[in-house]
Image: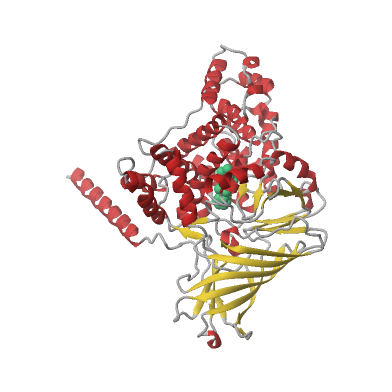
Amino acid sequence: MREKFGLTILVAILLCACSKKEQHEQDYDPAHDYFSYANTEQFVTEHLALDLVVDFDARELRGAATLTLQKLDSAATEIVLDTRDLDITGVQVLLADGESVAADYRFGESDKVKGTPLIVSLPQAAAAATKFSLQVTYTTSPGSTALQWLPPKLTAGGKHPLMFSQSQAIHARSWVPLQDTPAVRLTYEATIRTPPELLAVMSANNDPLTPRGGEYQFEMPQPIPSYLLAIAVGNIYFAPLGEQTGVYAEPELLDASVFEFADTQEMLDQAEILFGPYEWGRYDLLVLPPSFPYGGMENPRLSFITPSLLAGDRSLVSVIAHELAHSWSGNLVTNATWRDGWLNEGMTSYLESRLMEVIYDKARVDEERVLSYQELLLDLETVRLNMQALAPRLDVGDPDDFQGTIHYSKGQLFLQYLENAYGRDAFDRFLFAYFDTFAFQTITTERFLDYLDENLLQADSSTVSRADVEEWLYQPGLPDNAPVPSSKTLDDAEALAAAWAEGEIDVTEIPIANWSPQTTVHFINSLPAELPDDQLTKLDEGLGFSDTRNAEIGRAWFIQVAKRRYTPAYEKLERHLNRFGRGRLIEPVYIALAQNGTDLELARSMFATARGAYHPLTEASIARALEAKGIDSK
Ligand code: BES
Ligand code: ZN
């Protein structure tokens, strides 16, 4: 009887959960951006004009944003903009005839992730206008989630402050009041006022010959989504790499950057052959201080880059290929919402690998393919099932936390699968046409699926079915026939790791000098779980892992050091945590420490020392991880 009762309850719970899920799926609108308050079905922004003072003492941007809006719904009377922590001091409506009227405005309820909607009432005088401008005067807060204000001591030169933005995913709203959704594209212009000795650069037309002086003009004539708005101000200088390419950095890093990124022009030339014309004019890099939270950010015309790529041997430039490739996948054809992020990141990871094959060789790229595949397999062990689809139905949460390797590596694998099925020539023709068809547009996963179906699947219906594709897009895990990348050099390194651990070979017989850093990373990842400290000491002394100049080798090694509690290397581990600020390089090391059963408190105290130099987003993410581990281990 009790059993039966229990079963009834179970069935009831399942039914309930099921219908709730179905309800959710029915209500879910893939074309709607759940991470913006903007009423884009009523108004869309066409152009933005910024006039901002960069105040390093107050750590704020101050001035005005003027949005040129088009009214789509004649009955609409209120415009909702996204903001976060902005101090709004006035809103004016500018009409076509030059008339200017003050508009009433108020704030809606704030949300921790989405910020605060700014609701502007259209004054009577503007009620009939289909096009008008809104001028919002405002000041950012020192805690703006998009902006990092670095004191001189956190820069390479140590003499001048530096400020940079990171708008993706939904941080543009913390430095500009706007419709912060990738569904809307706008052109922009800007006047930026800075201390006279510093240079400002933006995701716009940076003229390498711009003289210093404290007032800078920018123009971005191609329409871009708001997450690609970007600015940096500091003691930065330019050096050319090629005809159309160059690098900005503090003078202390300029020579190293020119050496490391020497292949950039060649990458751009090859990318145009593969993917179609480069639509953005110049392509420059900006090498930022270590606190830059990502490997790179594809701000149009000017990718922002972590200095941790400066390994001295050009071994980490796949990140440059990646950011450049976003000039097509992401910047030209843009994901409609962050739930479609795989269209940006998975497609870009695939293009990155294709580009790297042309510039370098297939063997090297296969190494990178295997490494990212293995990261994916690790992730699939921990990511919740409903988050393992390429395009899950996401309407809550923080878009910065979405997906990780799923969007990147599963997305890349999916496109590799299509390439394998249709052959490289046919798939390349498909991609070329895809970028041409959707240039300067925003698309959903569903739009991609229809286009793929019409232009590739139906051409050869025996190869891949729509249902096969839907499995990749909407189901967890990997389909049975997913490609499995392999690399001979990595297999060899893996075998050597086992042979060395068994005592069959000596450290001196490990041919590390002939290995790519990727091979060394794989060797480290392949070390067997049980290794006594004196073995690890021999390894570290023989191969110099703790003193590596290569950030990815350091990452792989210090994760192992923390997991294995190899305490002799803890001092160097801490140096790694203080040297780098890119989340990928440090967060997994903290997590490995916190999870090794003993060192949660040590992880917390190392974090307490290092966090002042981290970007607020990285800092918050590590703080959350260490808090969660604390709860886990209780
Ligand atoms: N657009 C991303 C960075 C990003 C993603 C910022 C999500 C904010 C939210 C950038 O193109 C990227 O993918 N960077 C990678 C590079 C790597 C995969 C080659 C990174 O930073 O690790
Ligand atoms: Zn990317």
